[in-house]
Length: 199
Length: 406
Image (cartoon, rainbow over all chains, first blue to last red; front, side):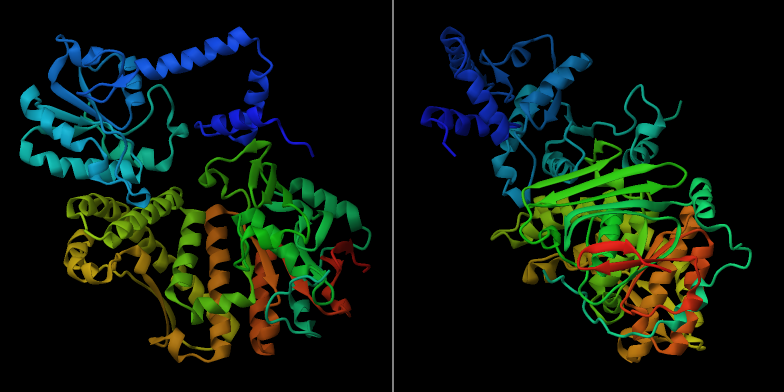
C-alpha cells in the first residue's frame, strides 16, 4: 500500500487532534483541502490565524472576547450583584441565548475531576473569590453540569464560598420545557419531583 | 479449531431426568406438527428469541438459527460450541459473557471482530445487532445506534445457570452484590444510572484519598455525592432482598426436599446515617487511602438454619443454593415483567444428585409452561425417547448447528 504524501499526512495528523475529528474525518478533510483552489485555502488559513490571534480570555470572567474586558463585563447596565458560574466559555453563549439573565458570568474552566487530575487550583476559583467583594456580588448562581463531577464541584464551591457571606444558588433541575413526561429519564423525573413548586 | 470449553464439564452425563420437564402435553395431536408450532409463534405474547445470527463468534464462522418458543437442547460432544450458543444469547441480553471474559476472547480465531444479531419477538418485535472488534464497537436496536446502555437493557432478559454460579455462595461478597445489582438493574428503572453514578463518585473519591495531600474540602464535595447516590442504592437493595428471600427459600426447599430454613439478609456496610458514618470513618480512611464504607462494601448474607451458608454448608447444599438463587431471579423477573426470562442452562444438572435434579426440573417446567423459552446444553448422544416431541433438539458439531432428527 502506498502511503499518503508527507504534507497530506502532516495535515491529517494536525486535523485529527481537533475535537470530534477522528482519523478518517481528518483524512477526508485533508484530501479535500489539498484539492481546493489555493486562494480558498489561503482564506481558510488566514481566518484560522486571525481568529486565534484576536480572541483572548476576558481577564475578569474568562469568556472568549476580542476586547478587554469582554462586552458583558464592560456593560454597566448588567446587574453586578448577580454572578453566574459556568464550566466553559461556551456555556455563556447558551445562557445568553435564553436572554433572561442580566447579571455577569464567571468561567471556571472545567470541573473538579480527581480521576483526570483536575483540582481546585486548576480552576479559576481563586479569581472567583477575588471578584465577590470588589464587585459587590450578592448572589452566586452555580450553573454547572449535573453529572457526578459537576455536582461535586457545586458542593465544593458552596462550602468554599460560604465565608464570603453571599447567597449561593444553583440552577433548578427538572423537566425540559415544552416536552412531556415520557421523554424524561428517571433521575430527571425524581429530581423534578424533589424540586416541585407550589402553584 | 478447538473451542473453549466451559469449566467442569462432565462427559456421558445421564439425562433421563429431563423427561420430567419436557414430556409432551396431553392435548397434543399427532397431526399438528409444524403448523401448530407456527400458530404458536404468531400468537405468542411472551418475549422470546426468534432468530440468532452469529458471524466469527467463538468457533462459529457463520450460523443463522431460528427458534420457536419452548425448550431447546443443544446436543453434541465436548468442545463443539454448545455453550458458545448460550453465551451469544446471554450476550444479547446483558452485553457481557457469563464466562467472565472480555470481547476479544469471543472473536473467532484469526477474525477481526464478532457479530451477534438477534430477533426478539413478543408484544413487539426488535432487531438487535452487536458488533465487537478491539477498536470498534457497534450496538444497534431496530437499526438505530444505542448511546445509553440504560435504553437497551430490557429488550431481552435471560437468566443463566452455569457452573460458575457456585461462586455466588462460595466466593467473595462482590459476586452477591453483582447478583443484587443485576436483578435491580433489570427490574427498577433508573437503578443502573444510579449505580454508574455511584461508581464514578467512588472512583473520584478514592483518587482524592490517594493523592499525597488530601484536600478535605474537595473530598467533602464528592462525599456528598457519594452519600446522596449511595442512600438511593441502599434503599433499593433494602427493598428487594425481603422480596426475593421467600422466592429463594421456596426454590431451595423444592430442590432440596429438606426442611432447612433458608434466609437472605441484606447487610449494608453502613450502619445508621451514611454521612455521619462516612465522617466517622475518615480517620481510618486516612490510613488506608480508600473509601471504607458504602454500598460497594455491602453483603448479601445467606443463612441456612441461621448459620452462614458460605461457611456451614456441604458442597451439594451450596450447589442447590446457587440454583435456588437463579431460579428466584427468574421468578422475580417473571413477576415484575409478566413474562418469564429466557433460561440458559449450561451443564448444571449433572452436578446435582438424582434427588435434587428431580426437584429442580418441575421448576423449569413451570417456567416453560408459563410461556418461556429454555435453552440447554447436553453432551449425551443417545437422547431418551420419553423426552417427547415438544423438545427441540439441535446437533452441534464443530461450529455448525443443525436440527437433530427426532
